[in-house]
Image 1: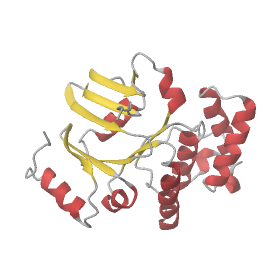
Image 2: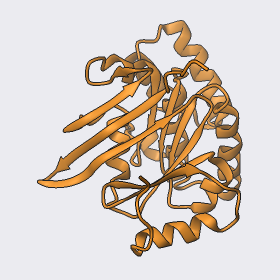
Image 3: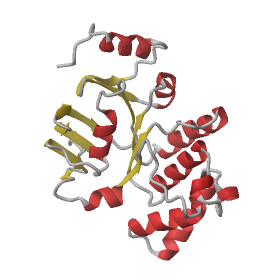
Length: 244
C-alpha cells in the first residue's frame, strides 16, 4: 500500500511564552475524515498548540505541515485550508452577523458571489438566520460561538480547528453541534478541544492528551465507556507514562 500524506502533521513542535516552555516536542498526525479530541487540564498547552496549527502562532521549534507542506513556508494554507474557532471568538461588536461573515469571507479571498452563497448556507446550517441583522455585540455567548463556527466554516476548509466549541451552547445546540461535526468530518479533518470528556467520547475517533506541554497519550478511542475518564485522571495524577 502506498502511504498517503496526512492532512495535518506536527513534528516535535515547541513554543515558549513569557519565558516558559508551554509546548514541547509535540508530534501527532490527523487524516482526512478523522475527528481528534485534544485534551488536557488548563495550562497543558492545548490552546497554544491549536493556535500554531491554525497559523496564528509560529512554533519556536519543529514544524506544522498541511498536506505535506510546512505552514511556515506556505502561510497562505492557513487562509485557504484551515477553519479556526478560537476559545474567544474574534467578533466586531459594531457589525451585524451578516456583515461579520462578509468581512470574514473577504479576508479569506472569497468572491462576492461565493461569499453570498456561503453566508446564506451557514446562516441556515447554524440557525443564525433570525439574528442575521443583529449586532454581534448584542449576542449571547452561545450565539457568538455559533457565529464563530460559521466564520470557521465559511470558506469550506479541509481542516477544522475547534477550541471549546460547546462553550455557551444549551443542550439542544450542543446536540446539534455533535450532529454537524459528524456530518462535516466525512469530507475533512477535525480537531476538537474541550473539557467535556463525554463530548469527546461521543464525537471523536482518536484522542491526544497533553500534560505539561507534552503528548502523554495518542490512540484511538476504545469504546470502553468511562475509560477516558480513568486514563485522563491517571495521566494528570502522574500514574501514566507517555507513549513511546
